[in-house]
Length: 434
Image 1 (cartoon, rainbow, N blue to C red):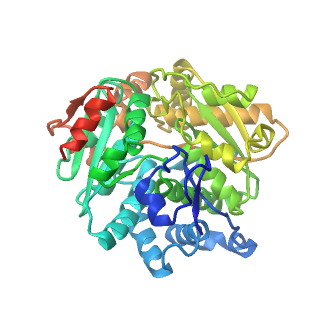
Image 2 (image 1 turned 135 degrees about the horizontal axis):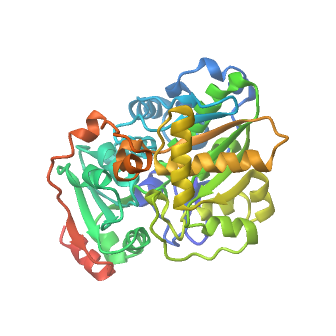
Image 3 (image 1 turned 135 degrees about the vertical axis):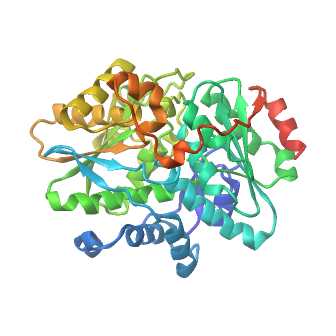
């Protein structure tokens, strides 16, 4: 098993190279050389398996012989030590709660797996590793928690100033130790651009061992496939085709779902649910991809104007837009629609959603409206705990949301962040002095 670049202009890599480099030299993204299917018998008995057992099987399928089985099992079991329950909402809908990890966001799955696999490789090399990560909200907190105290690894998180929630900011600016936060005077796209430039800078590559913890890194992507397969295991008892609605920003989450389908999981269809940053919706409708500057919305973790993982989706489907449309529907929604969905679900089902989850809920309802003859189980993904967005959820619903313990303890901690411009020269100068 090797890993190739989606742009096919750089050498193939082994798993260690793909994970530790993060990006190929041609600015593409790594993909596995071949994707095998799990046997049908696995899915026949899947409801009898635990989440870690399912995750290990998926990891072995996607990574093949790149890590010895015993070591891979230890990595998976250490990383996937919390649940992802499927919560019934009504007879046709269920919510996959991906909010039970340490940072209360779906990014915990990828961040914890990546921390374990990188530590595995760092132990072998003895050279300090510097992780660069851009965040539009939840990635930073998940990476900070996942890598906190991991020996031999320093984490540098870039986030857009005043464009993430206060609690999201606390999650990545109050930990200290091996976690450093850079507050960038720009957008998420600016943060992501700085990270990508750093990986393409030869002088920096010679000065530091750099890697990325964004979903551009294969080690973040693979574990996100775990919970799609686990969700199918939980939904199997309903006896209906499963459709997943995924709140989409940088499109790593949806790409992981497509990988889960590709290895044989009986997934009927996907919905890419977008906010006003609807470049994928427009690409889906017109076959033309026109990236642009992101705009600020209530679902801030999805405020991405140039989604990196579209490269991977196009690669999976050989750039065939009709093949993409056959597996994915795409819709986008306004902030007003998002708030109305939060109100509706709370009033009707007494269920709290964050703004991103509300976008996913809107997506599955659009699918049901456009496919009225299909009898399906619609699964919408809850990607963050509503308490992380108190400034939005509480006034929208006119309620007081209790803070989970691991958020409450951050409230009074002082923020520690280094101001950073959007100029690469300034970012490079900071890294060169490390």
